Amino acid sequence: MQINTFEEYQETYQKSINQPEEFWAGIASNFLWKKKWDNVLSWDFASPSIKWFEGAKLNITENCLDRHLAEKGDTPAIVWEPNDPEKESITLTYRVLHEQVCRFANVLKKNGVQKGDRVCIYMPMVPELAVAVLACARIGAVHSVVFGGFSAKSIADRINDAACKVVVTADGAFRGNKQIQLKEVIDDALIGCPTIEKVIVLTHTRTPVSMLKGRDCWWEDEIKLVDSNCPAEEMNAEDMLFILYTSGSTGKPKGVVHTCGGYMVYAGYTFSNVFNYQPGEVYFCTADIGWITGHSYIVYGPLSQGATTLMFEGIPTYPNASRFWDIVEKHQVNILYTAPTAIRSLMGFGTAPVQGKDLSSLRVLGSVGEPINEEAWHWFDEEIGKKNCPIVDTWWQTETGGIMISPIAFVTPTKPSFATLPLPGIQPILVDEQGKEIEGNGVNGNLCIKFPWPGMLRTTYGDHERCRLTYFSTYQNLYFTGDGCLRDEDGYYRITGRVDDVINVSGHRIGTAEVENAINMHAGVIESAVVGYPHDVKGQGIFAFVIYPGLSKDEDLTRKDILQTVTRIIGAIAKPDKILFVSGLPKTRSGKIMRRILRKVAEGDTSNLGDISTLLDPAVVQEIIDKSKQL
Ligand code: PRX
Image (cartoon, rainbow, N blue to C red; front, side):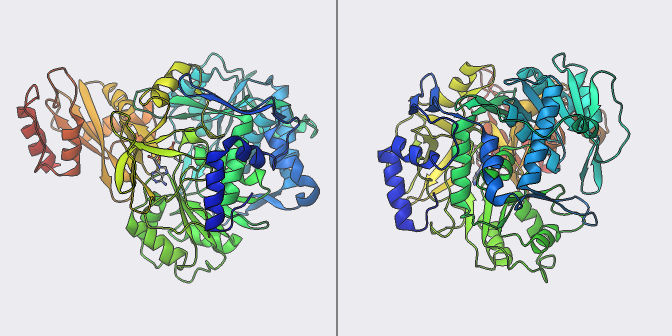
């Protein structure tokens, strides 16, 4: 399944375009199926209706666990590094992980979870999180993992949208020198969640928690009551595997749906190829399982390939900025997959934290989540890779399920800040605003994909029309990514960032409308407009323009109050970096906010605002400019 030379890549790519069904059938035959498919692909982007490997039966956990037992039973599947470096790390072999997953799958069943039921998982980055995810998949329940940084309200919205039956959580989480009271947040969330019948709570931080009779139970107690034999549920290839919520241009996050067969094939194939994973290697992805990167490249991709995947509970700067490098040295990490925001933040500490660390085990470096600027690319290459490790700058999305445009390690010549070339099976196309294809090289356009791939989303949970409108209606017969893209003279792709109202803060996708809704909920706020602006570490920062009439002299306190509101409504990740109080917003006569102007102001570039004559009240622009200079 692995591609070893650039010529091989080119041949494989051609084949994957000319005979996509044959190509993917060949890749899929490397996986374990209970029954083979009747039909490789049927599709129609207009509906959209996308079906891969129809008629096939499988269980993804048999691919991630059972099939490795005979030869790799004693190989580490998960190596866990705790937040506190003084504490012991934990290794789960494939045999142990298999047993834990089966046991917890039985716990879920005992608590009433059946095939097709939705389970919300809100946990710290501990091995039990991976166990809970796989246990759902084992019995055909649909997991919906919610990142540990989201607020009670965000969790409640997600639980209600999917009508989840059970929540799996923990007492708390450690993050650097902070503790997050996960169970408390869940308790707040569940006040408004009538569908939840049971809450299973893992003991982790040992903080006191309230346990509601009849609803809440302890993970540790429950696993003692079940055995470790749990046959894998037979799933159709197109049965739902999981839902993962992500932000878009409108206020409400969408539940992106991935299915069992295609997602498995795509996550496994891309993992094996992009990182050139070799048996026995230790692979470390620094993401959280609460995001798609963790789903595809901490859990499903690596485990489907029998890899050793390292899970880290903490943050890159705790107890100091050497933490990642200490982990690399301690666990002899061979492949490190991280985000530009982490690289930039560590760069800020200079080279001292890297000095004296043995990074010689590293063979491949990866980047994901946002455009990587050249400076960060070179720092990663020189200081971490010692100019000896290929950097794979992987472009993809929650919706794509797996990596789409990326170098293949040791195969594709890299170029700083370029995601380079599409992986086999991926057919990118650049279009102009009207949807006309922009051909040739040295061109810019909106990035679309014109042919299905196995890992793509199938729908948005409970609202198929929304899926159609968001991804398949902007341009006919194309999947629209929402990203702008340059194809340079060599045909290499560079993602230039979102062209819609989505901002990417530290690799986290946040909808401007979502933040505006949260700000507008604050008493006293009449209206707000949120835009992204370049931020040295986060990639993009959040800039909010807020109309707040009766503002008292203590502007700073009001700012903090607003931040508090946003934290309550969405979570700390959506807190604006800057808030500017204004008396009006630049609106067109039809009432549309001209974000272009606000973006310029947020960037500090007010010299050329373009034509503002169509504004209802051009005078507000001068006021905004003057005020922004005082911020
Ligand atoms: O704008 C692109 C950016 O992240 C968006 C997807 O965000 P999310 O669904 O949260 O998934 C993140 C992890 C896959 C994309 O639309 N993005 C992701 N990777 C890159 C990137 N932008 C530039 N270069 C990348 N390598």
